[in-house]
Image 1 (tube, rainbow, N blue to C red):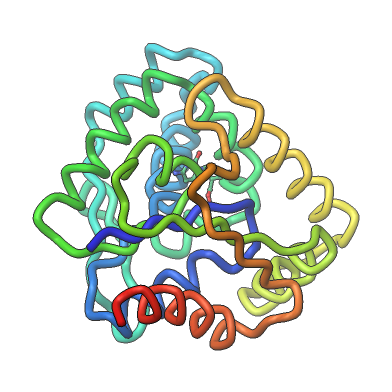
Image 2: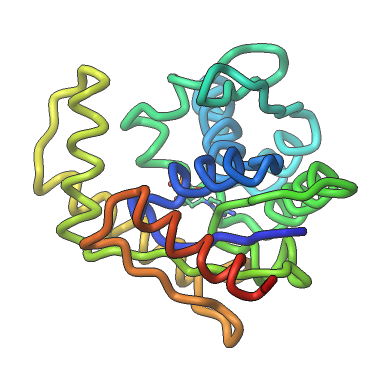
Length: 220
Ligand code: DC
């Protein structure tokens, strides 16, 4: 069974996908974390984020994997634990730029398909239903209002000790939405076979229950 979850930043996708995978006993693959790990490595190596060749080389020479860690997952990049570093505002502000390069994306799609082969998976991102798992059994498009997504991001950053400016957070989310849905390859979009889940007024548990009702309902 393959479950694809796509949607814009801050809609609650990752928490939902992780919870869903744990409930079903499936592997969870957070593809956003993979793009973030590449962006972090690019920043640390002061690569030119507009140079497609440098970024393709980066993707070709980077090992990314996930390790179970209590209820969460650790993100390991070239043997280093980058779980927290990839959530920094610096990474958030450049990751869409890094993820926009078509050749880098091709390489990431190969890596992600490989991770999903021979497993039941819940995979979340932007292009999962269209590019990574076009034959997924279920494709969910998870969204929420900009206001709600910004509030969630603010709470998450504050919990991690960052100072936040609401307007800047909103601008950053809007910019990412724009870049993610207007790029040449792997753009975020609602597919004809997507099931839309709006989480603006739902808790994570309610949103997961909604997704499960589609899956379990179909299996009866
Ligand atoms: O889901 P997230 O916010 O952690 O994703 C980080 C960035 O990575 C986001 O701006 C878009 C990009 N991304 C992508 O282009 N394709 C994916 N499959 C997943 C994420």
